[in-house]
Image (cartoon, rainbow, N blue to C red; front, side, top):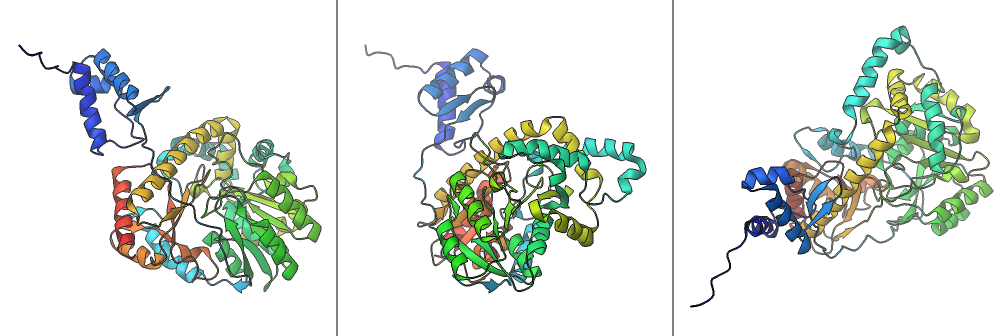
Length: 478
């Protein structure tokens, strides 16, 4: 009589069903599995049986246990796509004419029916909405008439004091009086440009550059001198130095930490060199540190401002990408240009809204910000990784992807034949928004085969389906 066939034990049956779901793609790398209790109820087995099933799946490498978090499907190692190469913009300065194109693209980003892969804002579920609104409601009741009065420059003292405390994390020590509160980082940058440049002057910027920066330059009648940018290390300083030897530049504007759209992070030695290079030539540096708090590594990058000993660096930032986009609370530490920037702030918008800066100041003072940042960074890192994996899976052969170490954006280089403006139009027609490459250059014929994808939304089957559809559209343009 032959040996009896092995009948799978109960935990093996549970493990096999989960294994089949992983193999079929129903459960994907990074997905969180049901809790032990949830799975025991669903499968109608004991908790010990579920624990044995999870231990078995972990032993064979299909899942992983994360302390105090749960069980997750282990990500399969896929070949990483190559990064885009160092950009090669034209060496001449040019007037900026990007606003018309940006306006067309932005209409798609505003449509609530569209899956937003183009906008660079975080999803509300990643933000402390209830906590901030509670602070705002309390302030509304407590402030009385003060809540509706002008808060003239330099603006909210309580927030400036909190910024001074946080400046220690940036590598330097600033005082409350070093800051001016602004309507977001965009106004901070606008004021910095106004303070040091005149119509017709040239501003050196990274290439590609955030379209909002380009619009600021355009609105002031300035020219943009685009400097090559590495997707890993940011602005190429040898190229900048050569450019400064060829022509007069009124200011240099950089995003050293996790630039938009590339996500590059300038090494500390490069930041030190940049500050010294510009100080030697008497050229102001406008530093956009909007994404500095969104680092994926263990430490926040030092600001260029932390190496500034003469006040030549204007540090700009805001809480739009970390706390509340709609509050429009930003700041600038303008160094030796402080008096002029404060006067310009008053003539530009008179004052900043009174209560939102106070609400953020209270949130910072009560210690909630750092806890929130840790969770936000974990979420954004996972979403960036998931988006990169999906691009590798669904996009045409020859696609390249940047590897940001912070922020919430992914810069994607498509095969040369793919026109990102055509891709944008086709994607919008099926309810998907993307940010096409040409809006990130003063020359709108640049970066025609690039797109920027936002990773600010938590990963869902709907997002995955949108990326899959986008990849299919891109393959149709090859």
